[in-house]
Amino acid sequence: MGYQPYSFHKNLETRYTFISRGKRIIEKVIEFTPTSIENIYNMGFGDLLQDGSVDDKSNSNNGDIIKVLATVIHVLFEFTLRHPHIKVIFTGSTKERTLLYRRILKTNFENFGNKFIISGLIKTADNYSEVIFDPNKEVEYEAFFIKRIT
Amino acid sequence: MSEVNKNTIHRSKKQSGLKDLRDQKIVFITKSEISPSKTLFPEKLKKINKLLKKAELLP
View (cartoon, rainbow over the protein chains, first blue to last red):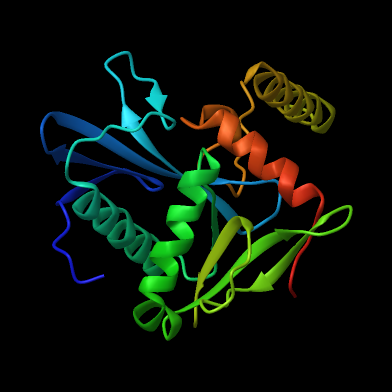
């Protein structure tokens, strides 16, 4: 993604924040949390509210979505560079947002594909299966995985 | 001091050391840097763990 990101801060080893400066000033937070499976970390992303909680469902509609997503991607690059053994999983809070993530992966596949192994989780008859992400296939993914090629 | 007394002192020091250890608050260091309960995204993590539980992952 060639867009200029916002500068971000690493508050903790697994937590990053940045300020979205669109129509309003909104503090954003990205957090990587270990899941129940070793070396798979969930990436959470949302608006940091004044009471310290996070809203990852609302659409901020701040007019800077491209710059915000470019920042999230840069943070993901930074985190996986520091922890190349970690596989990051992420999904949208809504179906539409998961579709947006698929579009971003598809559009930027040329940039990501040589640095990362990208896969997705698809629903099967009674379970879920991880499959290699194919940008040319219209598949409905439940979540995405990204891991540095080491 | 007799040999017997020396041993007694040595043993009581050991026992006192054990007591000190018992009084300490034990902190377990785990591999994870942030425990799941402290995440800012508990709902999302719950959803992801649910998916992963039922998922067949690539090797």
